[in-house]
Image 1 (cartoon, rainbow, N blue to C red):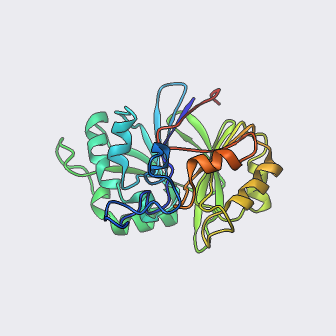
Image 2: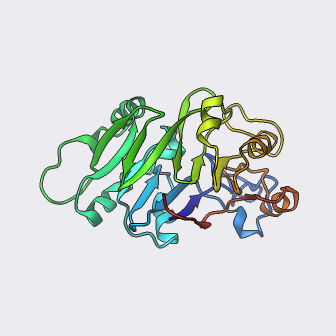
Image 3: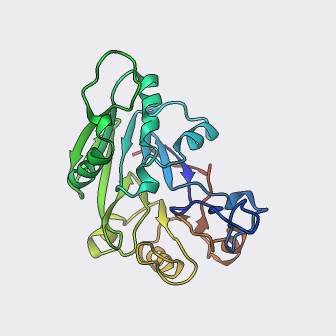
Length: 265
């Protein structure tokens, strides 16, 4: 199984719009370090059967997929409805053309309710043979259930995202937990025995109202003890080299295009 980190940035990406010359605000991150250039958070899971599962449709999805040589998606999972995780949904129409079918997509009922309000055209019955718009085949589950996606078992995990809820995902010994600020006992129990934990870490200091900061993530890593912890959804103060220097063994910043290989479930 291979995990590709398509994007590892916060909701505004990095650099953010602005800066002294209008060419981007890098915050505390070094613009000369290419691994500080971050698009919005998303991953692709390539299964042992060579199926590609996309997690979230970020606004940068087209560039992410082409940059990483991923030309086909077999299923999509939505973790929640914030714009940095769903605003690229329209580009599913190209993926529809590639697979010549509606895209199997998975989300909770509240997420589908919101997406159907914002992207109603993606849920209309298919007419004709040309995919001029995205067409989704919606599959609904309850957070906490284990679902089958593209032939693999995906354990879904209810998460505290501050003012709303999001989903963490576990496949085999890998978990992806972006957009989370606190973990309750049920979530921590679901994350025991991991090889790889890819986890939200927005800031160097304290927690953001909706995202964990580094001190909290270090506490989680100490308790859960995954063999490898990879940080994602990083904000503008998270410089790659500074993090590499500061972080203890087994914990590292992710970067766009990073690939993680591990045994399949």
